Length: 186
Image (cartoon, rainbow, N blue to C red):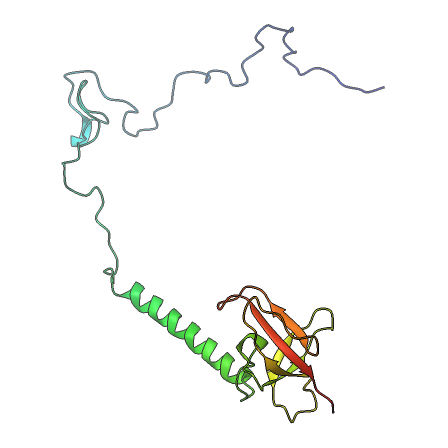
């Protein structure tokens, strides 16, 4: 079993107030030669020219703030309103320089690839996709990677003659594209 015993004052029965955890101080408050802890009675003089701790009844206990005056006057170095725009400009310039350096480092010197949509009759195309889902890019006709040559552009809704392969692209900035292709023989 446990050897628990109730506190010395004893617990209070359920629902009744128990003993106060902090009792009143024993005896009168001690004044160790310092100023009185409260104001002297009305009409009495304050010792040593002291002011009362609190003003007379009915008056505010602190000075009222005047309208339009700041409660607090900041101290320290003056504000620099030009600093934020200078920092923002420095950040934008740093990011722009970073993107420029990145583009210079990743540039291989070749012109950007033209997709089949931008090709003309006589241009050759390389298929970087599959036969069922082609991804065609313009390439030099003398290159061994050239898979097709554009023979005809029948328009957006036209069809190609049976002797040619038909390639269609839907959507894009110029609308639908249809190309008639002749397979290259290398």
